[in-house]
Image (cartoon, rainbow, N blue to C red; front, side, top):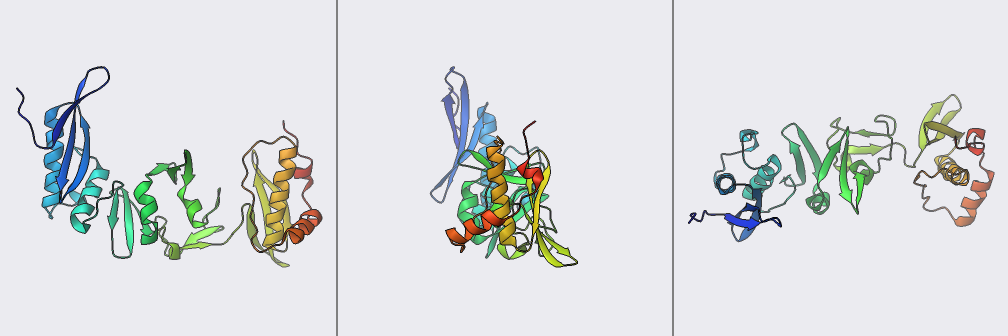
Length: 265
């Protein structure tokens, strides 16, 4: 009879295949360490987790691809050891902020106010953008901080301290607050250009206020939908503008013929 190993539990798949679950309990906190095809691997995971929790000299610098546990699990266990709170996502807590550590070279920073959200949402890297799965959709985390879709850093927003992975609120400065609206310096002063992306960028028009440009963007959406464009555009919401004032501007605003005459190919 196989000797029972600490932290190792056998289980069966639907097809009868035996596998082994590993877990550890520390200070009345039960932590799952994953499933393995052999009891020896599951036990090795238990021993590795035990070392991380009990040995304060171990750090993320000691991680390598030869370890049994994932890098994310190392982050969670070290945070639990140092801060007394177990978080399943790879978060390490600091007094007024936290780090979301995707890899040794990819560390995001967030205000402590965002802790509940990111403790429940796994961040994924797709190309150059960070996403979370939310309500069955992939959501760009930049949207959470007022950064619109298809932004250009330096034109639409900037990171105040120059660190592009520091998503603390005070570090993000937004220049363009509406979808499809871009601030432009001209000889006549500041103007606001409204653009929309269909199968390329189309200029809707140039306006004296960002409110007019935002409404022009909404009007362009309505025109394109009537023309049969099925793309899911996000309209602008203009807080503080009465329905009658909005309707008046909507009627008067000029839209480029490239939009009004747009036809699906």
